[in-house]
Image 1 (tube, helix red, strand yellow):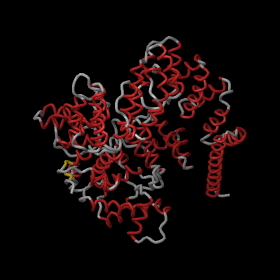
Image 2: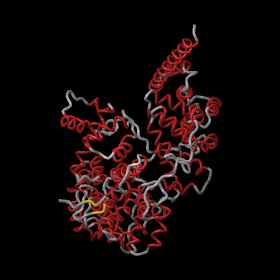
Image 3: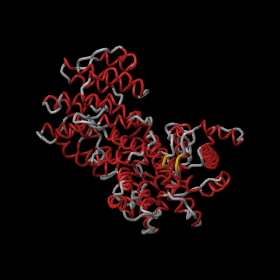
Image 4: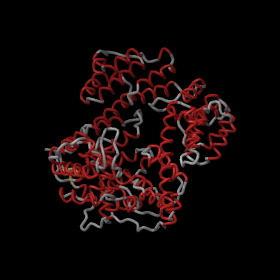
Length: 635
């Protein structure tokens, strides 16, 4: 037998073993899901030499965790120390220990856990409260103030603090309001029991307000109790979600029955919803809400919209005041440092403005780029300081966590693969991150290339951060549609991270994330015969359809990348609706988009475009401000 033939035969058998092991993994995973311990044990035995054998052991041990002895569990944790499966098992075990209140073992294991869910945090707080730790109460209070449902383990610690008087009736009302704002009446009902009986909510009235807020409000003439006032406020908030004027008209009739604090609370919500709808009355309503010593505190979301209203109205003094009233940590966000600097420059305070712009200009973000241009500098990226050596890439391929992730990607188990990858790279040095990104590039896992490369702190590779696969397939469609390559790549990077077969929860498909209806419409325009949705995952088809649609929205929206990006994400109608009645600076248009997702999306797409233009060495490339442009008034 020749050496070449022997090598080929060895490779063939190795491939069969991998394929067999992969099939066993998929079967053991299904057997685990069904709770079939016998089948799990059978496949675990077959998978002993597979790279995913730790998962097979995890599945087997997890099914018997309630009866397993401590030694067996700790042996598994030691064998796979610092791995994702070990952390998962430790979390599962801690849930059992907490429920059983086996605090000695819980206290040993909890500090070693990395992924800490609310339920486990609350078990840890239960233990600390039982041990007399007086500092635990402060942490319990921080968990209390939420409109979300909380796990049963948290309810137990809340109960203990309420019995001790550390959570007051006013704290209960505050959380009820948070639940109402979140539209979560279930939380309000569940914590209603903590109020004294004579102060508690009338659940029948609450149900009526939730069912038909307008009808409920029309039947309310007078209301004297705190509980009734809170239900009326809830009904007003329900109405505000859909109609500003009707809620305001009803409020105008009944506001005299509310305290100054309650009036401030409603006006803050009225101003917020008006701001979301780009109603010009929002600024005056925010002023009224925050005036005087009885003003109800604004949430961070409302602080942000108060500032955005000032931007939209061009009131730079009100913007400075709004930013200065934000929580300290919020003021340090890049968006508010940039806009504060702009407001200071308008006020001729250039020294103070530059003190904010100079450090911001070194950050690799949308507002970092905007700050650089405000200082009169063009975008530049660091030279690739660290060249990854072939042996480093080879070494990284042998990393157990990377090998497990690659095996999961091979089986198209993307969610589990991403978790394994993220866990593995979480403490990597810059050199290791770049080596891992190169491994992902080698295997065509483009989202991991980007998401790993952007984690570097001192040594960067912007060709990995702004990866550009499929350029050969891209060129003809770009030429056909006369589109800017950097803009299209910036959009695809945000849409799909270049995962060709990705499908979103909303049903968008492929590189350019086309909705089936949009793809069908474009296919009709292009005269594609026998079109069916499965074609949209094909790279060439997706690019052909997606670039046609992008060109279509550009043509509809003044050939303006900012508006086209907004339209691509939220629809052309909304992109037009968000214009002002006067010309608007593109950066202000972007920052005042009402949808959180679209607001972030357009900024990232245009920021991406700048980096791609730099990487592609495009001549006469526009600045970010030029890309943003001036948005023409509504027609």
